[in-house]
Image (cartoon, rainbow, N blue to C red):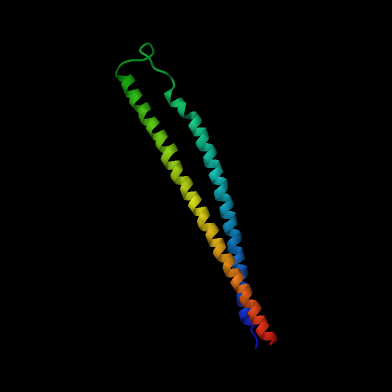
Length: 130
């Protein structure tokens, strides 16, 4: 019995699956690089946080209504800074980690499908030999 068509189809699927795994691995690499850069930027941002409090204001340097407006704006900036550092960056890093895990799981599933196809090819070849 000639199983060459099925073997060809299974071999083609294996090739396609390997291509998807390769693409996924490239995506994983880019995501991991992005994660490292974001963490480094977060550290830089954290070091710059103190600049929001500059210059120091005292009754000798600045006082009055505009001082209070300035201090309110400074406080709003600090709150946004904290929100960005603690919430938004955390969410972004979680999303990246989840995307990496999804791609790794997809690769495991594809690897399993490749092994299944290889097993099926061996079976078909054995049937031809019989």
